[in-house]
Image (cartoon, rainbow, N blue to C red):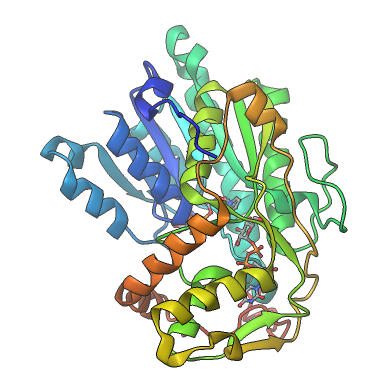
Length: 380
Ligand code: NAD
Ligand code: DAU
């Protein structure tokens, strides 16, 4: 599964200024690191610096690079629901390319507190579109031709599959969680700004990402960290829900290709043929821990079935034919190799995990049960 991928610099061509929203999050920071390492563009990193944000991985890269690189990373601490602040940030960035990743991203949190998902993902995307539209209309002709706004979305907008079939660009939208509904709304807004106002946009809908530097609230880091300290591993429902896992750096490859070479107005589904049941993923992590910490084996004894996630989507799977055939994308990691690297990374970065969890006030306990009142969920 090894492919050759053009460097970010080759893909970006004449573009000099890139605005990345959500660049302090898991996937956004991987995009920012790639842009800093592989090109000389200036990266404007617009992020509210919320609970899932951290800049350590970018600081590590800046330390490896020459002094000039530091000036090429400009943090803009901005809340997307603040229209005036977004407009000012877009003006300052004066971008040739916008990559919009900022979003509330955790399904469980959208169940216990949906309000912030509407503010960030729907109103935030609307504010960004308005600001970017104004910027685009003011651009000189030579920059206008190459300009793109790339909206990064999820396969969850397509809903839940049965045991057969895969999502593609023509699958009808059928979101079922507050998170996926808010992302679906943002996709529709982006398409509307393209058709109505002529904004050149590209969309991507990707499956589950995994890899280093993910805020430890999602399946793979949660299971690894709990198993490492002998805590019970929560497996939702019967553990037979399927996700299509993609290593984050393979997603970054796809994002750069789509942003720079994708056809305006088009969307691309991204996934690496990585379908696994949650049970298979959890068992693989436990087996790896058995090897690294044989004294506490078998770690599978820690697996504990817990009450299912409300509205839990059964299966996601992506058909990536379009991005593969039109843009030449293919993943460079298979799940076994990527998962093994990722588990090793979390085991050797437990201090970082403890730091970010403590800063976020998150103790690793179960999220996403329907217990909160309106006031607690940010809807009052
Ligand atoms: P993340 O939660 O790790 O990071 C999101 C970042 O966006 C955070 O730094 C956060 O502070 C910022 N943000 C959120 N709301 C904001 C607001 N109102 N104003 C400014 N900044 C805000 O998420 P991630 O996993 O890196 O996901 C990035 C994007 O990719 C999201 O749009 C998500 O829907 C999409 N996506 C994620 C996955 C996945 O498996 N993680 C898969 C497909 C698509
Ligand atoms: O499909 C893309 C989506 O993948 C992204 O859009 C989201 O931003 C991202 O969070 C992810 O959503 P999921 O809900 O699929 O990811 P999560 O890691 O939360 O859960 C993966 C599966 O594991 C899901 O079926 C629920 C289950 N699970 C999760 C946790 C945290 C457990 O069984 N136990 C757990 O403790």
